[in-house]
Amino acid sequence: MGDRSALEAELEYVKDLPGFSRTNPQFFSDPMIDKLLEITLLMAGEIWTNRDRHMVMEHLLATEGVVTPERIEAFKDESFAQRSEQQRLQFIQRIFGCLYGDIDVPEDRNHFRWLTGKEGAQDTTDSHSP
Amino acid sequence: MLNEDYPDRGNVGPTPAMTSRADETFLDYIADLRSVLMMSPAKKVHPKANAVIEAEGIETKATAESVEAVRDVVRRKLPEAGVWARVYRSTQQAFWNRVCESYGLREDAFLRMLEESDQSGPGSVEWDPDYVYPDYAKVEIHLQPGGYVGHPLAGLRYDYGTRVFGGKVSENDYLHKAMAAKVPTPRDGRVERIMDIACSVGKLTCALKERFPQAEVWGSDISAPMVRYAHYRAIEQGQTVHFLQKAAEDLDALPADHFDLVTVHILFHEVPTPVVDRTIANVYRLLRPGGTFWISDFPSLGNDPHGLHYTNLLGAIDSADNSEPYAPEFVRSNVEAKLQKAGFSLRYENPADMNVHGRVCDKPMKGE
Image (cartoon, rainbow over all chains, first blue to last red; front, side):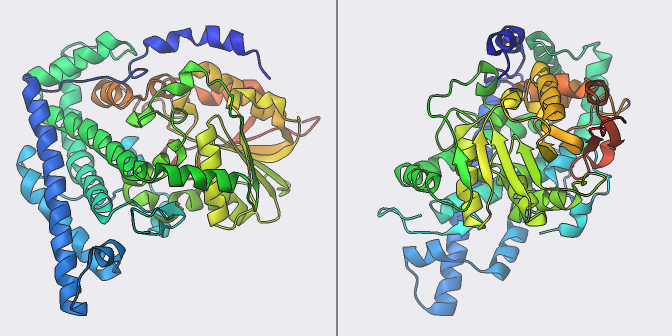
């Protein structure tokens, strides 16, 4: 095994790097705006979650005539999930579109490629889309 | 996974499902929110913000002062960049919190699950309950609570959390399967032993086993929670893979000239430079002559001199406020030069397809 103490001494500098400890950043002139935007983002998620539950209940009542908490928890349906995803994206655009003037759903939702700024790159993941 | 208080919602592939549908639905919303409010607007927001940051004369450095100077410009002049940064930060916290809360409701059951899989096969796991982690490894990378080493369910949390973080690319392990399909073999074609360093939850490790079923496949990681969960996940997939808790810088404890193929996926930007250097030296030693080293990670100064080097808005916000403290020094380093200095010959590198093809190096045959 390598010399642990020598490496530890060499790594002392990392404790001063930004991000080594968790930050509490402020991105707006008034910190309350940071908090209110966060609350809005989370609250919309809770609204969507309720809406999903309503949609599942309606679907189960229409197709099976009965609904129980256990049936809701176990519910899986691919075509329902695809419709739900489209509605969710529209829901997000409708509520938050004003933040940037106009926004659209990116065709390429590969987060890793986006992060590195190589969105135009072709790679073989394209032929393995889920 | 059963717990008498919660119905069994099964798995999503090999990953245990969220404890409730509400948690799963909320996390689907967060993943889409990030696509719509982060990825798409970044094309417009980043160039504009970067121009203003440069006009202000702020030099991007890995210091708290440099990061705060960027935040200050955002607060004074760039409200849209403020929205982008707030969405990034708040959604990141939100999905980790929800994942941890949801699995936390069944924590005892998950701990029992790991204890049982520790003793089960196929494959194996070796880990040390008394291991003392170096400080650099305790960072809460990507804001994951407890980081990779600070909670016994870190592997489980990471698995579902990265489904949200990565978006569509993470479903069904398809990114890792696509990578494994493209990992190059040594020039003589012999692949009998494979080591996947920093394997985390073992997605690439298992995908390599799928591609090379006759090979003895190992995965190593500094984190005990990661290798324990990786072993559980491999069992769920019926894969005979061996997992070992071992820091990349400590792999000199393994036999020399032993492996035909060594892979490292997204480790180098998450560890300090001295650890990268030791890892490269260790891999050179571990590989047999003619063996191949495959690295998938961010582009760096070495292979992308005019690329994005983590400057300005993204550099400041991602390194500081998404807890990626080591990424700036990696992307500004010349990893290609380090590989060649260690003795490797560079077969292939292309910054444009780093997710899949990565960098390919060969350890020369004796006499070459």
